[in-house]
Amino acid sequence: MVSACLSSRVNPHWLNLHQMQHEMVVTVGGRRVFPILEYQLMNLNPLSMYKLTVHFEHVDNMRLRQCNGKWSETISTEKKEGPRKVSHKSGVKDGAKWMAEPVNFEDIRITNRKTLEDKSGSIVHLHTQHRYLPVLTVTEIESGSEQEFRIPHTVFITVTTYRNRNVNQYKININEYSKNNRRQSIEQKENQVPESTSTPPTTPMDIFQLSLQALILSNLSQTAPIYPSVMTPPTPSTSPLSVASILEPAPPTPSYFNPYILAGLGLPLPTLPTLPFCVPTNPSALPFPSVALTPPSLPSPSEEI
Image (tube, rainbow, N blue to C red; front, side, top):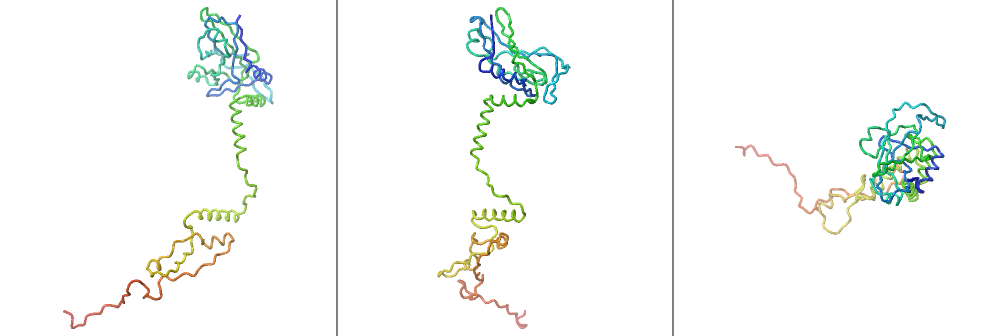
């Protein structure tokens, strides 16, 4: 006689969750059944062809509501429809292949929206706050005989969010995907640079001074400061003077900054060099001849035409 049970990999999890009043989350977009439904089949005819399906049936006609941490029951008014059977993705196989390894239905998704069933054959609509029991059906193709298997500790309550924190935490601990996320989160925290323990600025003056210091530090990385106030005088040289060397000051350097900024930071003012005049006092030192500018002479009356 054909027999079926949960695989040794998932059976302990279903047993533990059953003792906690197992809750299964259903969403509008469809949520995977977790732990997955994984069965081990036995006593099949190795040469016969079989098809496997799973559906969910109502345990009772009650609607549950949680109050003060406990579930209360009322008569359900939801319209009950025939269960939707989800076929295994492998289709039809002989008994030897079905028994060779555990068979799982990890592609099943449960939703609380009926219209979503039209998008995929693996999506099943379930009413929230109801008890359901998964049912495995083994169908022999040649004879058409069917056998159904119900495992009592796979009963669960459909919810939109977990009400039982123990159920939620247990599923997080056994979920490999959640374990990888937690491991990555721990590694990121370990690699983070510890934050400074200094007291953050609170007064407007502290904030103002820190802002100015940041501005000055950013200007130091540039070729010239944003707020130069003093031009570096030309370097004395024995070469002939030129107009450019006298009239054009040298480019600003980051050695000097606006005295208002320095005063705002409480820093001493730098010693300023003596600036040269832009026009030399001796015109003969210019490299071009000087031209006397005299007003034009007016013609005498006798020269008029």
